[in-house]
Image (cartoon, rainbow, N blue to C red):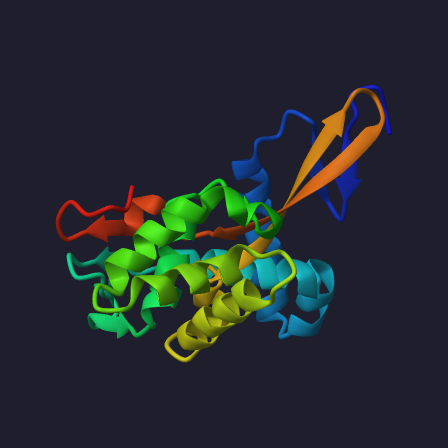
Length: 211
């Protein structure tokens, strides 16, 4: 490496000042060359399976449907033949909670969202007994109860039955670890649960209690 910090690899010269766009252009040329040579095996080795999975998720982002929440709390995928995501009221309540918190929520802190969950459940299950609703919510926020995991698994299974796994990754309640650094050495993580769907794709038929 010379004093200009230049890296040379197979005839390509890149500097620290090289823009991501220029790098992508060079990469595109290499990819086309490997494809033309029918060496997809080498292309996969170069990219690596973990990166390939991330690229598939990123590619799915371009095909995402808008999610419409109707005034009677139906969930409609507008751009996917207006398919409805069929969920029970309690699952809808959980989904509404995470839609309303794009920053993510740790399961262990669900007790802080009890009133919000209760509000959503009351709205999605208007004919259900209030005591039964309250009991269900208390199970959801209990850190020693598996209810919230069961509800999120059910939501995931419903969505996987409607779309491929890479598209579903944006709609399910998934895990996200947020790194924090305290002082000079202490590192800790928030074990967040989030819905990755860009919120500009979430629509409301009319003003309801979400958002």
